[in-house]
Image 1 (spheres, protein in one colour):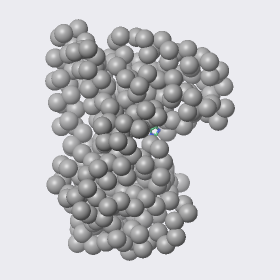
Image 2 (spheres, protein in one colour):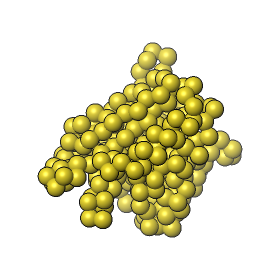
Image 3 (cartoon, helix red, strand yellow):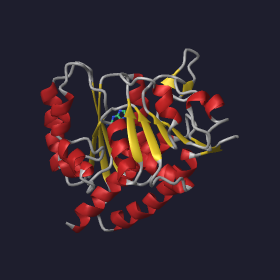
Image 4 (cartoon, protein in one colour):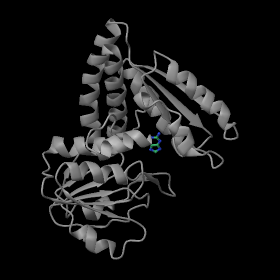
Length: 284
Ligand code: GUN
């Protein structure tokens, strides 16, 4: 079998065209959507992600601003910036790019973002709302995965879903979204015994661990939908996912490529959350 490719670039492009239209309508009413991104330190991958996010805003007609600080900046400087952004009417979404340098208390920084502008959905009260099935902002990567599955018509209700990875950013919210959509969900992680056996049960397999090509074709149930959240840089500079695409695509029915699968959907969902926030502010 050769799997159908879930093309995140194509779906994200289509969604972003719709966002642009809605942003123009808001801008005509003097309420252009605005995103502020905070980047601390010089992690090369984070710099690239932030650049993609800011460029996507510009293409969709959003206002965006970047606040870049050296790795040794005082936390108080970042917290003061967040307080100003929380109060700024032209800003509807605030994102602090993770990971932060070690000397930062990331939880304290995230807690300083207004819950109404927390477009990553990382604040504890937004996580709680998502857990209870009444989300304000759905974290961008898992939200993008759900959109990819929906666009391809992959059935979820009653199916077995296995999420490999238990991070706050992807694994946990991903598992919640799949559960709310009616899947029976297993979360696997570094302490899981016999990971291949769990993976082989999955009708929907989401890999979000950050280990290059660790999920191979023999760990996949024939006909499964395989979603690869990993972005790993190989020694030769090329990018690859957590899934071994060559062997997995022989067994799966659906598979996301890396790059061009989940990554562009994460950015599209960031725009969606910022737009939704701006629309809520405009009617408030
Ligand atoms: N670092 C890796 N992924 C993300 C994300 O979705 N949001 C933020 N803020 N930082 C990240």
